[in-house]
Length: 160
Image 1 (cartoon, rainbow, N blue to C red):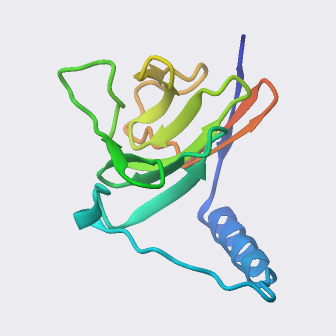
Image 2 (image 1 turned 90 degrees about the vertical axis):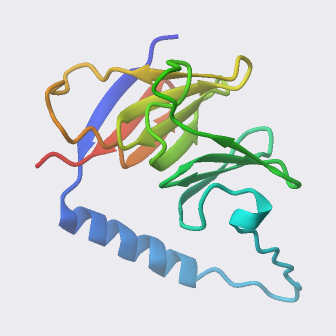
């Protein structure tokens, strides 16, 4: 399957506007008549870092947490952690995770400080994806946001 990548450039104003819209939409959600139970997990419970940058639930129900120190998969009981290993090309290209999404084939797409990665849950391998049309010499390869729509993957990056 061929994917078409769309590169989206965010300015600081756009990011602030997006944050405000998401914040306001979260305020409108109300829970009535339900008791909510929260469980708190920290580094001592197995997550790689306490500061979480993104959360995603995949099609199998697993929760994925992106931090500045690794990608974490949570099955409801324990965490599996994924880190960049410079000696192993099948690992994620950076341990600093900004966003996670999933395509219609069950592949995870991860935006990192070192670009775009694809994770095949069947093989357990990561692939770094070269984005065509982007400036390969740029120092800022950050992929801040991802969205999937059919065969399109939208990539949010900031060009200075």
